[in-house]
Amino acid sequence: MFYFLAEMLGFEGIFNLVRYQTFRAGAAMMTALFIGLVIGPRFINMLRVRQGRGQPIREDGPASHKTKVGTPTMGGLMILTALTISMLLWMNLASQFVWACLAVTIGFGLIGFLDDYDKVTKRSHKGVSARVRLLAEFAVAGIASYLIVSEINTNLYVPFVSNASIPLGWFYYVFAAVVIVGAGNAVNLTDGLDGLATMPVVIAAGAFLIICYLVGRVDFSEYLGIPHVPGAGELAIMCAAIMGAGLAFLWFNAPPAAVFMGDTGSLALGGALGAIAVAAHHEIVLAIVGGLFVLEAASVIIQVFWFKRTGKRIFRMAPIHHHFEQLGWKESTVVIRFWIIAIVLAVIGLATLKLR
Image 1 (cartoon, helix red, strand yellow):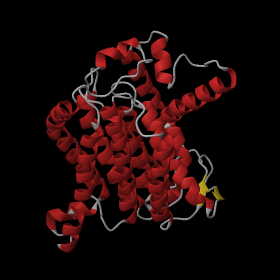
Image 2 (cartoon, one colour):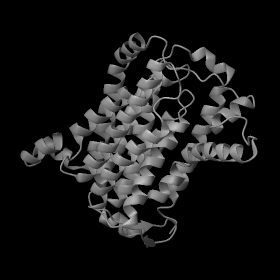
Image 3 (cartoon, one colour):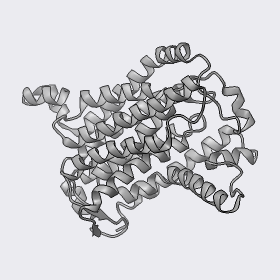
Image 4 (cartoon, one colour):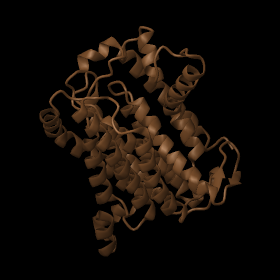
């Protein structure tokens, strides 16, 4: 909105600041942070009143989690509210990338909300069936992929090698949808401890803020040997807004959590990161920057596969953060150490920009 207004006024005077993506990124972060902190207490009280006993706790989960009974879920609504308002205020709404990524964020958020609502009303941690949820996610991701790919080429760029790419043709649409859905569910699986998913999402968003800004600049992309995507720099503002909304939520989600983000938040944030990575042509780098999410998802896949084959478990409990809890690590220890891993992986992901 502000960009459109400044453009109408010819970017005169103070409105010239709005021309710069760096300024709008900073403004979007602070706006989302402010909104999240202001609406947080009222949102939490509303959720607590409406949900009563809060999110159901897994009976087979770690014993320490029994103390979390009564904690409300669907806190992702706080994140989505702050994020969406900030995006609409500070982003250039003429960009198709903006609407594609916003569609994924809101669409996945709605799917997650329905899942959370089903869990709360039925007092079960199962929620909507996996098949129905995946079909809905691929429908949203498919539409977003079509919008994004209509603005970019269908090449898969390989990190560590300058301007190296693999032409995927029509298959790129499928690949893009898989990346978006995979990212959404990977973050969803990571969201099992207070603050565990929130901070790595903020870290990953910070890394992609830099990536999106660089690939959107023809001079920097040519110098670094990375694909240039006209208009992708606008998504740096969305990344900043994710960081602001995420930090605001972390204020209330820090141990002991006053609210859980639920599938409403984790699916939306993961899907948003996936859509941003596709638009920026850095899908493989997302697997590095978000390596923690990949590890969490892989631990579940490996556990299920091995148990069905042998009847035995590789991990004491999956996702893998619960495995370390079962080994005797305190929840805060697991969270902080996983944050450290997320930071290291983000740095490695950013290093791919120069190591070519």
